Structure formats: structure tokens, C-alpha cells
Image (cartoon, rainbow, N blue to C red; front, side, top):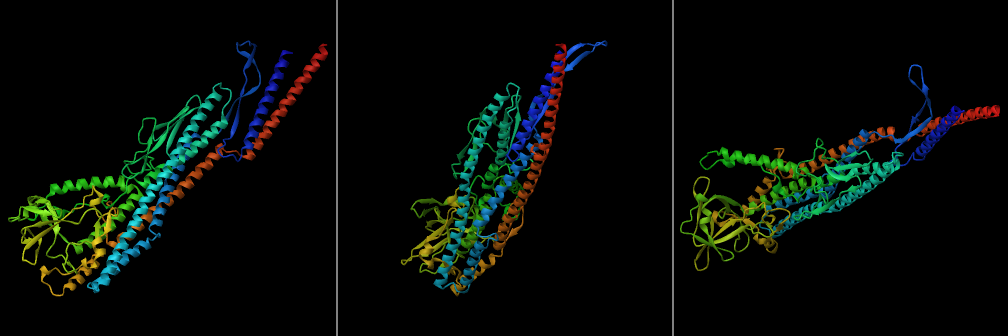
Length: 638
């Protein structure tokens, strides 16, 4: 009879197991369309066996006591999860780059960049008109106003690029806040999962689903990895820095870069400092092209770039002295510095689409401005060791301060070419008036001398460096126009879109525009010189402006430079769009595989339901049979 009661309990265990299977199947079916739900499966095992007796051969004779559900597990593939996180993160990264390139194209007007190209064309057209009739005051006024419009449009584009950079702060801040919230929630689920699973009786599958869903979302923001401990908690690392440790989460924060107000992302409470290494260009190999947050930071860059961020390759002819001797050592030093500068460019300015286009665009404007300014106020380079000061030892600046002229007997510097420069159409025949000015710094430091000083031309002949003027009383005065060199460490000293203005003296008096021949040249037809000046400017439009990218030695004229700049932007944007399409397809393919493993199939679950229902019915019939046997046995034994 004891054996029958044991068999009865075996049947009951079958009922419980089948009922549990039905419950799990129903739970799966109820969550067919629930986002993030992972299919659950019952794991059935034998219950313990009862020893009955020892057989003749010494082995134990045992009676099984039925079956039990040892666990209700989730069906997931950890490898597919990690692949999905990586590829969705990479997709989000390139989406941000693609989005940024589209914004930049909008800022320039059209995909072809036609709007600003029209400003370049207008400037060329007005110079062509000036070449025909430079003495017409109306034409001079038109030239200055067109130059002003050209600069205003360029500065408007440049300002919009800068504003767009700063506007990304909000997006960075929002993503950092969301990442922190995800970390706090994962830490909460860690504690709940550990609490529920501590007894080893059940799995906290619904909490695990919620946690996995958060990991999927986190993958769109940043690259991370994680591992699970024996308690069911996970440790999450972002860029190898601890983010979540069991029930504790660490926080990211935004700090402003003082120079420009850009946000940088730093760890606030785990001692790791900067969250992302931005010292090198993004790389698929190093997995630094993952996550929309890094995508924003990469697209934005770390600075507001200008023309000085594009390194110029040293030219051998610049290292040949006046005796024709080539200084190979100095050239190699300069070449090494250039190669280091190119590497730095690729990892910083060239790594960001915004800073790259800022630098390239500013370089275009800088070279246009320099070409025009140098036409109206041409400089000559002087070597200090070739300067003859004569009896002149000191001069007087415009501020009335003494200037030690012996400073000019060393090094190299530039001065206004007072003999060959054109002069204004005003009564004083003013010289040295530039069209585009640095906002705070004059083009020249004017030094008044009591005598003439001389330099050397290419043939070794003496050339006067100061302008000679004679007043009504016959008194001679000499003025040296010492060029204030650009200083790339100070924006105020640079001809950059951040600091340039149209020369206010010109807008107040158009006659100051130098369109006449210098009287020192003794030429007939003063305005014919102005015609030639503008013709030369027009011809210079077809001369090489310089390289667009230091990684390519292809050089372009003004129009081709702009065309290739916008074309390069479009090519990069198209490449990123293709990457987004590829990553989308790849992520969807991996997600399909994940769903084949973790997703719920209605057909499969209905089959399982029938299986468990049959098992339940079989267990019921088995119990009925045992019940009948017990009833018969009891009745017959009285």
C-alpha cells in the first residue's frame, strides 16, 4: 500500500509540473508583443529517488518520486546580445555624423552650396567692373559694399556653425541625464533580482527583461560591456570605467570648456575623470565609433576652428638663403613639425566634420581677404641683417612713444612697399589702406623717422623702406609702415572670420581705396595702374589658393576650392548615410536572430500548451488509476 501512495504522489508531481508548464506557456503567449520580453521555458528534472533495497549484485533498487520544475529560465543568447549592442551603438554614432553633415549643408544654403558661391561670384564681378573704370566713385562704392556683403555672409555662415556647435550642449546634457537614469534603474533592478533569487527558488525573469531592455537603450548612447555575478547582479563598464556595480550606480556630468562653452563629459563620482578619450580620431578597430553621445562629441569637436588649424607643408625654396644655399637641417626640422601637425589635425580638427569645415571655410575667406589686402597694401619682406639705418636710431609711434630702430636689424619682418603700392584717390594720396581689417589690430604700426632707412631687393640693390613726405615749409618726414604679423595664438591678431571687419575708414570715405599709381613710380595715367591692379586680382582668382586637406597635396583655385570643400562634405555625408544603412541592416539581422532565440512564437507556444495539457491529462488519468487501485485494495481488505 505504501508503494501505491508513493505512486499517487508521483502522479501529483506530474500534475504540478504540467500546470507550471501551462502557466509559463500562457505567460509567454500573453507577452507576444511586449517589447523586451524574453521567452521563458520550464526546466524539468527528476525528484529524488527512494532506496527500496539492495540487489543481489550490491546495487541499490530505487523508486522514482516523480518530476519537478527546477527552474523557469529565459532563453537568450548572450553573444547575440553583445553583437546587437555593438551594432546598434555604431548605427547611432553614424546617424549623428550624418545628421550633422545635413545641418552643415543647410547652413551653406543648398547641397551644392550655390548660395555662398554667388557671393564669391559677385565679388569677382565687381572687381571686373572696377578693372574697366576704377576712377568712378560709384564703382568704388559698389566694390566696398560688395566686399562688406561678402564678409557679412561668410561671417553669418561661420557664426551659424559656431552656434550649432554650442546648441549640441543641450543634446549632450539630455543624453548624459538619460544615461545616469538608466544606471540608477539598472542598480535598482540588480538589488531586486538579487533579493528574489537569493533563495534559489525562482528567477526574477520580468526584472531581468526590464534590465535587458535598459541595456539595449544604453547601447544606443555609448559603448559598454557588462558581466553578471553569482547573485544575478551585473557590473556595467562604460569605456572601461565602472558605471554600475550591483546596487550602486556612478554618474556622468557635463563640464564647460572655459574657452568656448562646449560641454565635455566627465565622471563625477568614480574617480575616472574624462568619460571619453578624444585624443585620437574615431576608429572601428578600437570601437570608438559607437554610441550617439560619442557621435555628437565627435561631430562637434573640441574647439571653434579657423584657418590656422590646417597645417601648411614647408616649401624647400623657403630654406634657400640669398646665396642660393639650401638649409637641409632646418628644412627637416620644419618637415618633422609639419608631420606632427598633420597627425594632430587628423585626430582633432579633421576628426570633426564641423571643425574641419570651419577651418576649410575660414581658410578660403582668409586667403581671399589676404589676396585683396595685399593688392592694395603690398608688403615686402626684409631681412634685418640687410637693413641700413644710416643715422636713424629711434622713431616715434602713433602713440607718441619712442621706438628703438635697432630692433629691426635682426630677424625677418614685413613693411609696406612704399614705392610700388597704389595710392588712394583722396587729396593726400593715402597709402596702406586695407579693405578687410582685424577688429582690434591695425595693419601697420606707423613709425615716424627723421631720416630714410634702406633694405635690399632680390638683386642686392638699396630700396627705401619709409614713405617720404614734405610739408608746405619744405620739412621732410619719413614714415615706416611696419606690418603687424598675424599671431595664431591670438584671434585678435588674425584675419579670421571671428575677428574681421570691413575697414571703417573705407566705408566712411571711398576715395581712400587705392586705385591710382604711386607718384614715386613716375607713371602716366594714374588710374591705368588701378585697372592693372584689378586685372591682376582677377587673374589671381585662377591661381592656387592652397590645399584643402593636409592629407592631400591637391591644390585648388578659389572657385574649385569651394566646390571641392562642399563636395567633400557631401561625400562624407553620403559615406555616413551608407554606414547608417549598413548598420541598420546588420542590427536588424542580429535582432531577427535574437528574436528567433528569445522571442515568443505563437505557434510554438500553442504546441507547448497542447503538450502540457496532454501531460496534465495523462497525470490525471494516472492518479485516477492509482485511486481505483487503492479503492479496490481497501474494499477487499475490509
